[in-house]
Image (cartoon, rainbow, N blue to C red; front, side):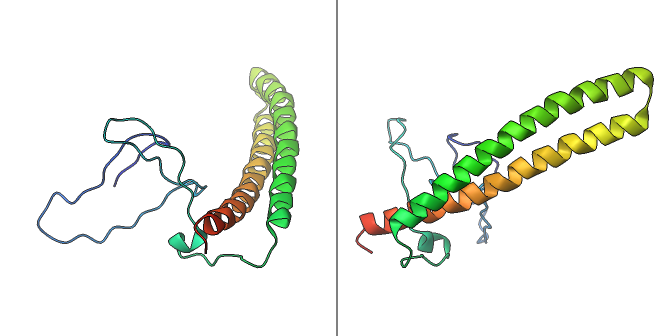
Length: 147
């Protein structure tokens, strides 16, 4: 297993004599998925790839303006969810703190659950944004390459 943080230099190689089958998961899978480096150790500009590189069919039919519109809508929706999440965290953190101070575990658990619901809603929306972004940038990468 190899875990590399975003932008962190890493190499995956087989250290044995037996062939290896490797499963690669880039999570979250948001383009560009890899950071490239020069031999001198300088970070290269982002490298965007068509979705077909990842065995995902390319949406060549939807106009780029529509893909951009979907991306912007998803970005705005995520911003709204993030604001709501921050409000819920503040409100429920106060309720949780008070409940713990008084030993009211029922209220504490309820506050924790409400904090999670707001977090979950925001993270769910982030996946919608990631898909909209990947659709847009994949299409632009395909057009860049003439395909």
